[in-house]
Image (cartoon, rainbow, N blue to C red; front, side, top):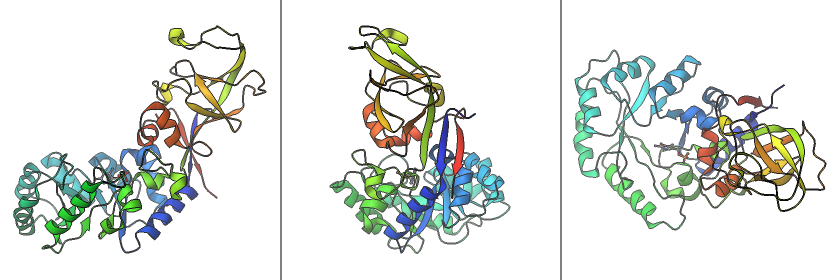
Amino acid sequence: MLTAKAEIDLNALQHNFNVIKQLSPRSKIVAVVKGNAYGHCATTVAKTLSAADAFAVARIEEAVTLRQAGITHPIILLEGCFCAADLNTAAEFKFQPVIHHAGQLADILSTTLASPLKVWLKIDTGMHRIGIYPEQVAHYVSQLTSSKNVIGEVGFVSHFYQADELSSATTLEQLTRFSATTAPFPGEKSLSNSAGVLYWSDAHFDWVRPGIALYGISPRAESNGIDEGLLPVMTLKSQLIAVREHKAGETIGYGGHWVAERDTRIGVVAMGYGDGYPRMAPAGTPVLVNGRKVALVGRVSMDMMTVDLGPASHDQAGDEVILWGNGLPAEEVARHIGTIAYELVIKITNRVQRQIIST
Ligand SMILES: *Cc1c(COP(=O)(O)O)cnc(C)c1O
């Protein structure tokens, strides 16, 4: 029997895609499935989202995995090729690399490819992580357009760094800089991540690039996806493997830092940091047991964690536990732990079987 599992709800995934489509009706959608679709299983997600116009990943290996699973959509490499040899792989599998620095430009200009590539230029409009400066764009476009290795118009991408802050002036500055920089060129334009899709409708351009919103999670730390009309795709589940009487004054688990203030009953859950549940989760982090919110107590260990069921509880070994998802937003758990839900879902390890749910 499956103990720790991550249910992946394909109806919720399709619902979230439809919400994004309605919010950006004039844009094509590149569904971001990097990091094994943020821990949700990239090939399953890509097969479900056949209505997407393209997929995007961070590493070329992730793109190869999608092609080998039979995905024929355009696939964008968000950080491009990391070495000249990868350009041949990109040509073989028809990937669309981003170009964000001089070395990548030099590689594509100097390599002999079996077939030409569609490419995207990454412009740094203010994030200052990767991308060329606006004043370099004309030079890059003319070099790429005249290369035999490039087919079609060069597309343009940039990335927001504060779009989850609804009153952020920097987002409008990035938007203005992106518009002005790309206006002289005919290629397609793409700026919005999930936060751009949800909160900055002027920033949708030709292609939107949602990731986290597809999975039903809010890009804002302060809100839950459910408040944005999204449905959680992953529900992380396990079960109680023991229920124990626990006396006031007794500690629990490694380190012995948590001390019970009253006699109570403790539930032992088959879920630990070996499954990707954060070891740093503090006492008080919520867990759903039989649909009731209870508090994590003691330190999360590799394969188990302990929760305070309360003295009057009737839960038993074998009962269902939900760590996040339906009934308990991952965003809420993340706020207790001091991280974002992106990190929670992507870190679930392979020991946790993904179980596909669809009707
Ligand atoms: C990851 C990523 C996205 C998706 O971001 P979300 O916040 O998950 O929507 C979009 N564009 C780029 C370049 C990315 O790296």
